[in-house]
Image 1 (spheres, rainbow, N blue to C red):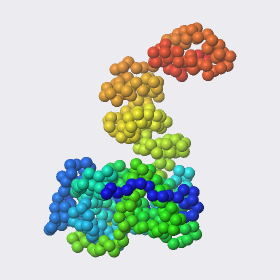
Image 2 (image 1 turned 60 degrees about the vertical axis):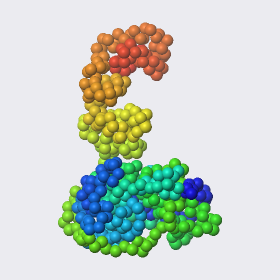
Image 3 (image 1 turned 120 degrees about the vertical axis):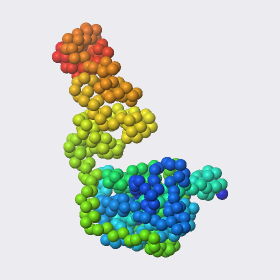
Image 4 (image 1 turned 90 degrees about the vertical axis):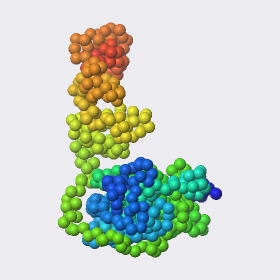
Length: 507
């Protein structure tokens, strides 16, 4: 029988927050961008043919012994430092024992009571400028599991499937699991805080260069632990864990849905079951997975085939000194340098354009010009293509240097915006760099003042009624005359110069 995916009863949002306080914890799994896996030399290329990146170690064959990936350890320490964590002077791996087809060894090599990073925090800024501090319990090293594909059912879940396929390419890829302490006092802002935390964490990890943090590809995934307490109570309720939520929007929606679902159960006198839940992006609901195991169910014990990790203090301080500027600080610095308003900077950040604009400015463009092209014309084309700006630009092989060159042609007076858009068409069509396209297409503003004045005189003479309106003080009517001048000059006139000349003659 197929698993039901219908929504359970929920309480209204207002009633939920009037009666209960949420207690929320987030577990974020991050696949590290190492060249090889955590305990063997297999490659980690995403999208390879199933079971082509495996060996006796990651397949768990008898007699195969693991070796720790040093870059994986280094990345874990750098993440811990960026999260203001303490770095353990000594820690070790453990075996987390469970049977599931995607774990070929029947245990996962992880860390249990001795994580490499612990006791940190991350300050998260919400849309209204409020800063919420998320306390970090731990960040520990482990390996990813394989990927099961359930075939033949309607939902893609194991329930109702006729058979399952397992790809072990992902088994053994280095993971860092970042676990928050329980977040209390968030109230109705809990969904917003969850989204902002994951977004801030994603930006931080990307700045560190330890992962591509592509949530849509599963290299960053979030588990949402949530329970409700009656207003005024200090006791935590029974929690649910919504697994593998893979977008910022879904993290927010999952928290909100689970809050209202728990509230409906509790308000009717029912009991919340401690279990894992599956998130359904299409319907915006969660459904039951399995009853949640406790730590003792996994029979943790120290991994006998791996020596303990004891990072020297010198190494840790060397890594600390090399950390990049935190993304939040960098954005504030760039906003000041670029002269953007808060709204302009927020739009740039939300569109993921900070790096592109920064590189465009470094290539010689003005900050205002770089934002105009990336947030305007290029974003419009990307939206029409059904893509985000970054992916769109990468797919077409265009970047900051092209935009900087195009902007310089406009700011230098050779092109107007309409002509620049024609040049961009040529760049996207593979005709070359912007200057070369402008040359080949013969695009250049008319610089001959005599030709411009002749066109203005002709248009004024041909439109006496409009010209009189300008003489009478209706300056906005000059727009119609400017349009006629541009038409007369086949789009290659300087609109600003034409406007100035028209006003000089009529006012």
